[in-house]
Image 1: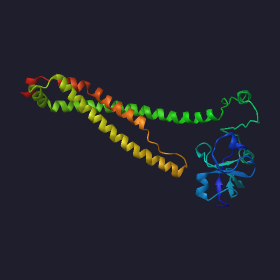
Image 2: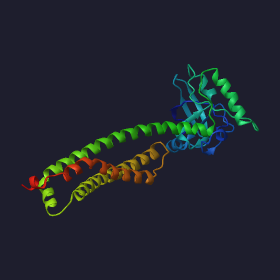
Image 3: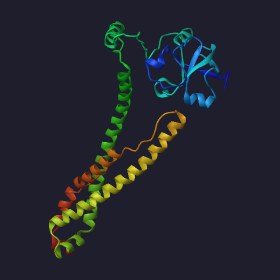
Image 4: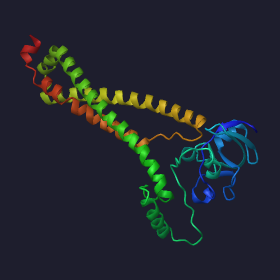
Length: 276
């Protein structure tokens, strides 16, 4: 809707369409200049905007500027919903707060030589090393992976607690069924068969619990990705079949580990004392 007042942040994005793969769906960044604004597809759909629409923007210092939509892009996750030129932003901020500086190369320039030249400039200001497009995307992926590692660590702690719970449950179950175990031993069941029975009981318990957790987690993950797609404009649900299969196998192995001590205790039951 033309004339809507919005809060914006800015960056110098001339040539962004070729320098970075932002997925331009309408318009272009080639001639992006002062007075232009780029919006994400999600924002454009929510506010009925298109190339040529005008947007009345408000700045943190209270000023205002009318922009013309010059491009609509898809990479909302990296660049947010609104992009303007740093020239428009310069008069409305008290200090530089750039988080990403994009450098375009002239035709025929050697990327490695250009990267070395930029590194020499950034070194004077204690800035990070320059990254090419692939490296920059990898750095963003590493931030997400770091969060996943924390989740995996918490999952490991939960697995340890679950193993202790299974072992304690089996121990109590064996204590309550001492007479039944003694009767089975009396009618011919040997110690190996007793241990196998307890192990299978543990495996079935752990696998069923894991299956329930995987099913519930898949449902929540599907709902979360659907909500992100609707709200943020990115994200697709993909069922990780391989990791789920690995988790199920590990769950069975964990059940075997949890049953070691209870199985030994059951196999060592004295037959006469058990049936007395």
